[in-house]
Length: 151
Image (cartoon, rainbow, N blue to C red; front, side):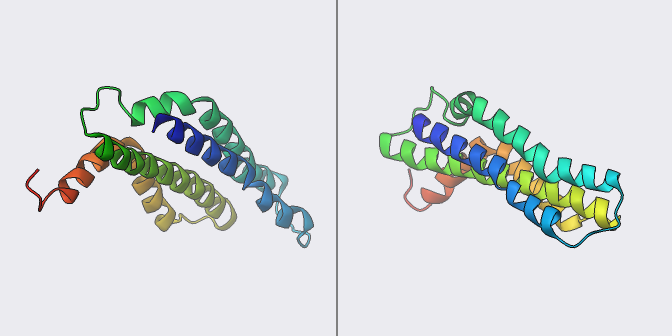
């Protein structure tokens, strides 16, 4: 399960790092704008450079993160381990994706319109909750799954 998590973390790292490059195309080939150089620079950093850096860091720390997601002292059964591992890994990956996607969106929205994207802030908070609460989510999954079986 740990190897599976490492592979998924690295795929997420590649996606996070390469997906924002698609956002660069409208900026380069769109109609000329009158925005200042500083606004373009901040947008470039928020939407392109930051995800590239986060993707590279995520790639490098995939194995330690997988060790944290799947603790070695887990006493669950083998079938339950696979399910719990998938729930933990999936929760973590979804949290990382949502957080990074909406950080760039919130910063870009603030730079271009001067207002705060409250929806993105809520999603960032939920994403961070998914990241730091993987073990809680795994335990919650066990309680919900085994609530009627008496285990």
